[in-house]
Image (cartoon, rainbow, N blue to C red):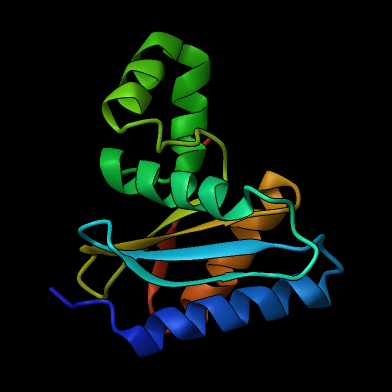
Length: 145
């Protein structure tokens, strides 16, 4: 299993923010966690809302906690609201069940971390995460509808 390096995490953050600026997105918060859920890199843009970092963290942490991208968690929340609420409680509230939390996989398909992005639409958040992960030479797994 590959480990998520600091350099890769910083590439993810920088490229995701570049993607956001190129797309004219609102100010963003980006959080990269390693496979154990520890903070590897983060950036919160000037002008972003106060809790963007916590929301971004919750998207990434939720993806790691359940082993699925937050797009799948969003779908599950609609179908099994009590389950997702229970997992959120067990995770100390650190689970945000909307797209924008993307698992990071290595070449072998192993989870090496997750990215959470918050600030624009959930689809735009997710697209920025995927751009950052690809720039680091890794594979993004956003989950499925």
